[in-house]
Image (cartoon, rainbow, N blue to C red; front, side, top):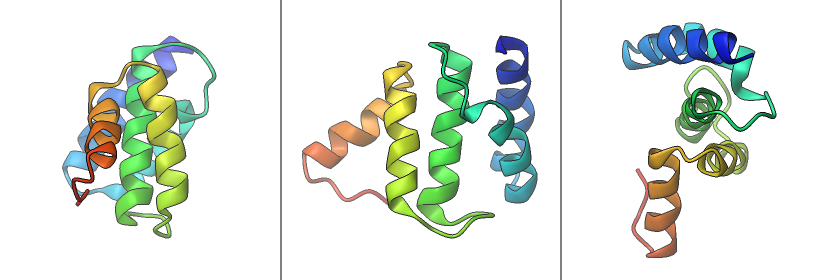
Length: 94
């Protein structure tokens, strides 16, 4: 599972950053629902949260995004942790 998650972060993260959101979704989804305590899995979950938060390649759904961010923060993803800190402080999330 960790090899799949590592691949998903590399390939899916690159696709996301290049604006190829459908490709990113297809790759990231491979590992985003793994239920293991792994930083790579947390990173795929964070990227999935971004896809849902902004509606890239999927219908925008901030509830689903937040569930992915929560999973990512539980796996110590710093960006997901920062999301919840900002939300708690009332800082608008864009």
